[in-house]
Image (cartoon, rainbow, N blue to C red; front, top):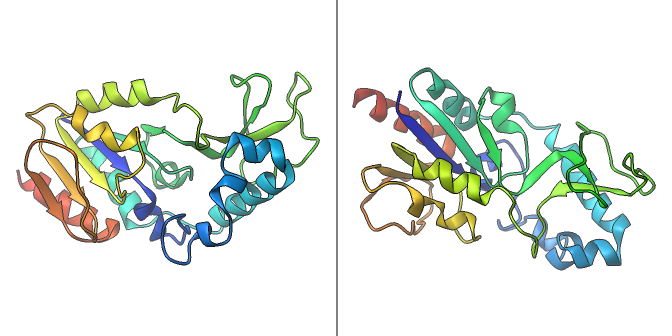
Length: 228
């Protein structure tokens, strides 16, 4: 069974109503990234950071996976599908995908500020000041903030390097190191881009482009791959 590796970004979740940081009218306009998504922000105003992520978590549980998510899950019948996502939502899993690697963390988890290995499933619950881990330290969102290392990049690179087919969906490829993952794909692996916008994919080969939103694009991709 061929290995199909997908790098997904905010565009696939936008169709489910998840507001993105970078779109017009997105969250950047209401919150300065430096105030909610950096270690300095946490040190300066923990309550604001917690409120921001609590709002995002509540929003997530009012949304459902879309055709793009379900389409990728359905491809597991025909391919060994591995999803590397920049998204912190759980829509891929809720649609049925079984191999999902979250590069930038997960909204549905909290972790200890003292011991990063202590990670807790919290579902749709808020994290509040005074919520502590078993070692007595405040819990924080299990999110990779700007300025922090991306812990699963080595794993993601290894997965990408084993791809028989590599697909980029709904990401501007502006955020590194994730944006460089397509370059890990072997020269023999065809690279596909699904996005309604023009996106530069940094690989030295032809990129097959499906200029559609994720839902429609995954349907087209599936038809093409199964014919081949």
